[in-house]
Image (cartoon, rainbow, N blue to C red; front, side):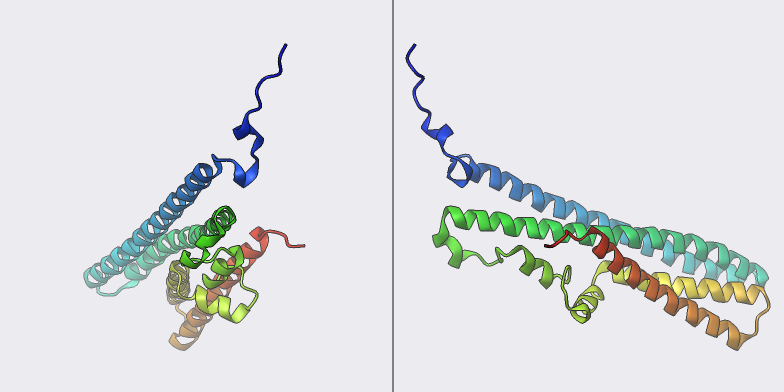
Length: 219
């Protein structure tokens, strides 16, 4: 039997394979769509949380007028604040995860651009975004070794807004519980402020530990 003719396309491997560009392009669009879905989920969750919180404030104002700011108002406030805080906490947890996932997709797109440049190196002057996986994630504030810069960038994210609202809710809930226990005004305000500050610190700590737990190991 005569040997089968050599398949030139099959002999090409890696980026030399003519199918490589199609595969890389499909992966690029997949990452873009995944980032879009993540942003939509984050904004949707944050919108629901803020909507529930706004409705709670309006509802408490109506209840306070109906009950002449009596003890019933505090009871309703305690229950509603607890519900809002629960929704805020789960929203914050998911937002932190989405932020981290988004950083992974950004790094993946940078790797794809690096592959494109290996195929056609002359295209590098026309690439606006970086092809270094670490550069883009550092610009987003993820994975940066400079803690101050990471903290400042984190304060501008949706999860930080949710964390701030959660901290205010936690302090308000503590103050309401103190008022139900007939605690004096000054100690009650001090407890509320302390709980708010503690809550903010715990939110920051959770986000930092989440990144540490899920960050890829480096040699």
